[in-house]
Image 1: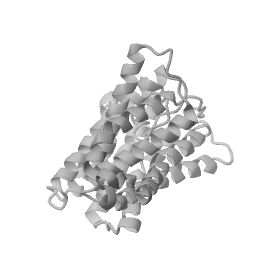
Image 2: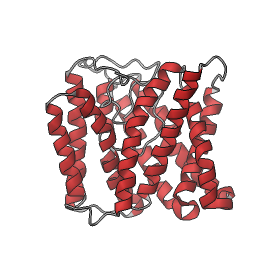
Image 3: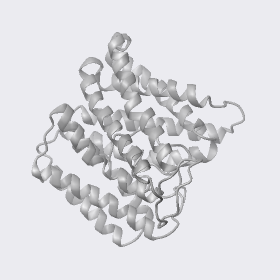
Image 4: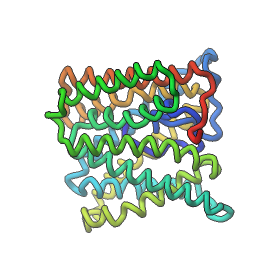
Length: 326
């Protein structure tokens, strides 16, 4: 899949439509056309916005890898979360009063999940290629989609995904750092949890208020970890500027582009396009980080993309899916 980022708030229904961030269900205020409705002229506009968001988030991830020698993986996560939280607070200005204890509990768990997802992902890309990390990570939302569907056809998509993972590991992950693989899979599990709590938070808070508050929780949780690893390096102006660029490319810009795209794009089309993110990640890794793919690795990414698209189409064919809360 792609590097996890803050999904538009108020996302609903299918986990497979959420296998994209970011696998992201439809935000409040968006009015996607019903599935099967002919797209109007100019539909390349929202598609272009969505693809631009995917490119932005993956190249932001590549920039984060370049920043890691300066601030470490935990330091980069801290800078990204702090910058994103500040931008979202300035834009959303969330209301703090009038929320129940259950509301705050939901947003805190959402923030914890977001922090864990980002931390595990950056630990992964610090050890294994970006394309491999994103491909392994997408298994989390894909598993959520398959389990929630309970359709026999989804066993085919699960089999394709497992075949892709087997190819990616060369039959035993001998060419990949085992810790990096574990971190990527852990990030995928947190991404699945993130999808669930993103939907719950969106139903409890208006607009993107819950997202902004959860981002603050995540940033505060990671601040001690980042300071312990990077120390005063976090105060270096160049490091701060690069970290802010990572936040802009990986969170703020993709979120804005996706929000605009989903106003004119069917949610099913959104999910399918977001399934291409492992390929975008591989391209970013090749162009920026010189991380070339072998033929088996390219085939593995293609299999996982096919599995993700298949799961999305299966869900769309079912009609209206149930919500993530069941």
